[in-house]
Image 1 (cartoon, rainbow, N blue to C red):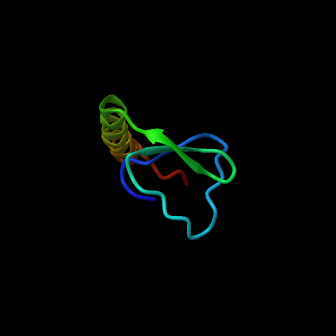
Image 2: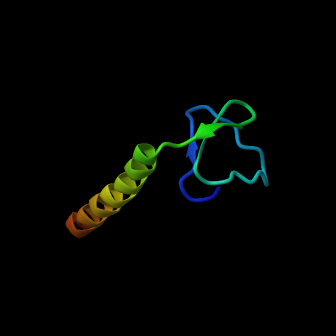
Image 3: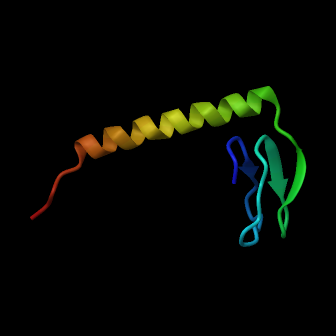
Length: 66
């Protein structure tokens, strides 16, 4: 799965299937539906950074319970 690839909920990606980046993939098996818009690509970038920061925040707050 290449960068900037969006896979829809319930899509089935077969083993060893190459998904070129920049496209929306849907269905079972997954099929290339359309190119992502610039805004959709920006949202992917935003989401990746947001969730990475959130993970770091939660890791910093984790505690060991005895």
